[in-house]
Image 1 (tube, one colour):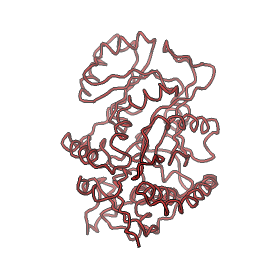
Image 2: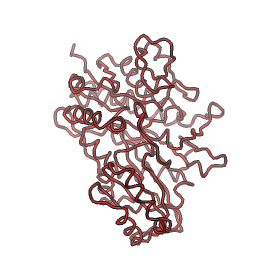
Image 3: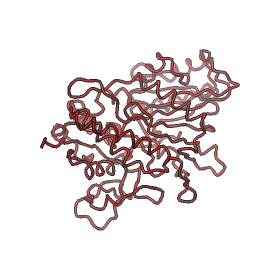
Image 4: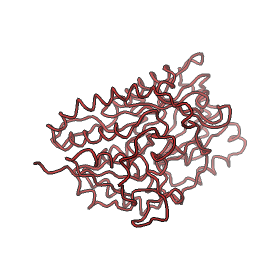
Length: 429
């Protein structure tokens, strides 16, 4: 009997519950998960072994890893919490997936912690995706420029790397481009930290507005300035999940300012308007082509694991002097790309996504590690699961749970907040 594949899963989510009244899937298999993999809902930290005083909750990253453990005897699962990360631990595994905690989370703790995680992830050559891929996503200008070069529509953008930016220079540029309103966001960030909206006339009247932003975020490696897109907040932003370059599922959300009761709304499956879903799939599929590719142990090119592409919608006038968008019709554009540490929206879906992701990751592990016979044997099963998932999207959710978001508008949309106590939220998107 061949040795089992030892596969690592870096976890750390605290905002993607499966033990939740809204989750429609089966959680009975989680009964024997060690308590140290459950998250304290008050502190957002993993419980300590033997701590029976707190009822910890299970999030989707650990659920996926545990499902693989329970259903794949050829795979030895190594669940790696943030506090367990080390180069030595990672090197013990054939490959290591980032499902939760990543370098952005580390950066919220301290520069020393970030340096430690960066070293572990960059020197371990079995990270999936690779450190090079992760940086391609963390630094937004890298994938944004690649997408622009490929002709993928994006909002009018100005890139502001650290060391060559100033508030005065930015204001001059946005005026020359014809913008009236714009937003600033940051690379190597999450949870809308550093996201802020500006009105050009106000910045001209009081230059301290932009100067204060630059002073507060002086250490950020890169700002992204974009013209404010009319219609973005009142239309659906559609987030498409891909695995192996194939569509898995999608969710769409509409901003709280556009809803009748002031709460953000999420829809899934057949509730997503077809125009928004099909355009999001079209644009997202093109974006996948510009991403760094993945190779198996024998050097063969293989499909990427989880990638999420977020597509927005513009309607109205775009004032950028380079733009050719028609204000009389909707224009769909790529807003963001994320990877495995993103939110899976498990409790918002109308089907149980855990077995789906479990099968995807198990099959990808065999493919990456060169277990061709098992991987090919699982291919048909994986394709069957894709077909099964499609009609499950159509289940009526009815009164099972509200699809409205919590007050923090972007809380569910980004990476987990575990161990980021020092982070300061400056503005919500």
